[in-house]
Image (tube, rainbow, N blue to C red; front, side):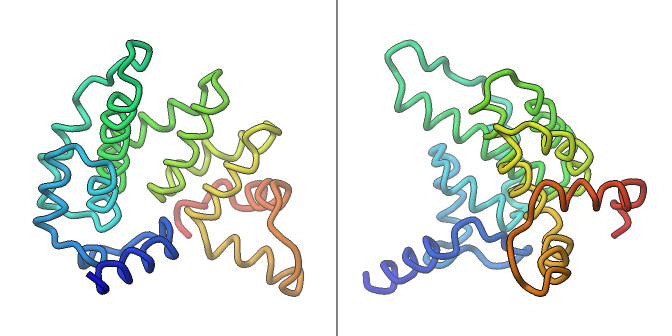
Length: 193
């Protein structure tokens, strides 16, 4: 029990640090995560995406293709949990390189709903696919979403973001202006970085 508590604490402290293809998150086996995904547990699905577990691809596709449940029918909590499972399955598949699911999140950037748009931006940062960069740059001009876009860009291109701070002698934080300048200089060849 103490080991599981320590594992949970470590995971909480790490947040959404991405795992390269590797072992299951602390305290869970791949089999436990697959069982959780079968129960539509969003955290298990998210973990399978973080480690890019190939054994889960078929199951994740099944979950991603299920229709969302309307949340206005008095079933709020269960619908939100199910819909989160669907979204995390799409994130997982996009992280595994499935363009269809990456395109789903990119298309959400044009949403008129600010909270929904920020959610799609966050997921693009979690996916960490360079193909999303050119779609995130224009969002830096939207005051309501610029911070989320900056976070996503930093998650996708962390070495570039670190370079901004290094240029300032290790002081300050990145800004949308840093990313805009970088895009002007490197927008044509950023996928080759």
